[in-house]
Length: 90
Image (cartoon, rainbow, N blue to C red; front, side, top):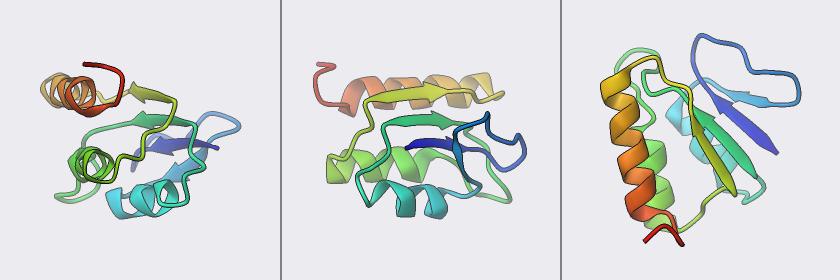
């Protein structure tokens, strides 16, 4: 499964859409997400940070993770956390 996490931009063809961090985590729980693409800023005060933290804590990582966030500072944070926590990146 390909999972697109963004509250505004619709996903490309062939991607499931999660508009909240809770929705993304719910999808990740099943272990079937192979590709993940993240925007950082989601609706209200929600962000993609809880998703990364959840993956770090639970050791469930998609094979491919992309960051498509328009927020450059937040995108850097996401990349650093992914690089720090994802198995095989150390």
